Length: 291
Image 1 (cartoon, rainbow, N blue to C red):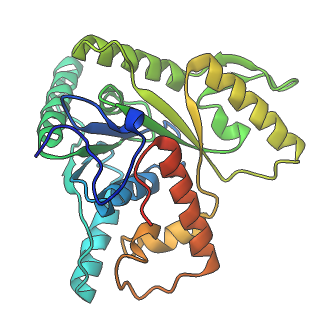
Image 2 (cartoon, rainbow, N blue to C red):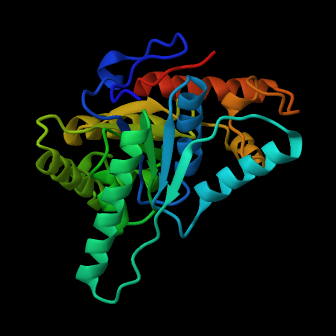
């Protein structure tokens, strides 16, 4: 396998976002707030890459919650029940160390993540890492390996708090949050470890966006635009229809599977609209968009 990420299946991904000499691409999906849709995002990113013909690995650092593990188990079960041939990633999960000493536990966590990342990088075109919805050491280590960091964010001031403290009177940004500071620290850790001058690309995807004409939405737009310039991320469109994604979880499917295999699910207009949202996210990140 080549260690460069070349277009396959006739795709023409964004060369700036896709090409990285010397090793495969690492995509980390992270947010310290639970319920943001991290595992759903991971599954759709992986499935898009698999359908485009890339070799993909998944590293689950949120193995205690195990949402991604269950998603992939459901996918295997569906394939066995219906005789489907759906693309699957190579999968590896890491639980936090159970050593009593904090220093020993952190060292073990760091060593295990490094070993897994290096092995999965060498064997695949893409590695997608799912991180815990809390601030822990495994999450920090995972962020430090990102080439692209994708942060799903429900579009409300409650969820924006994970990125910044907002003034309640004028909705101006007061200061970045602890998570934003952690991302900056892991950018520096990655640059120091790998000797890279360029840090990773940070993409915040806005889920459940409201009506543009509402005052709250206008305030959100202003706050997130200001914050993007201040702490250095790009904004991408996310997902609005969450019911469809929850339904697909039980079968381990994504919206990108529905036309690629005889799943027995008839595509509705809601499926089509949600699928277009997935395509918009992929395009914004710079990943291949399948037909």
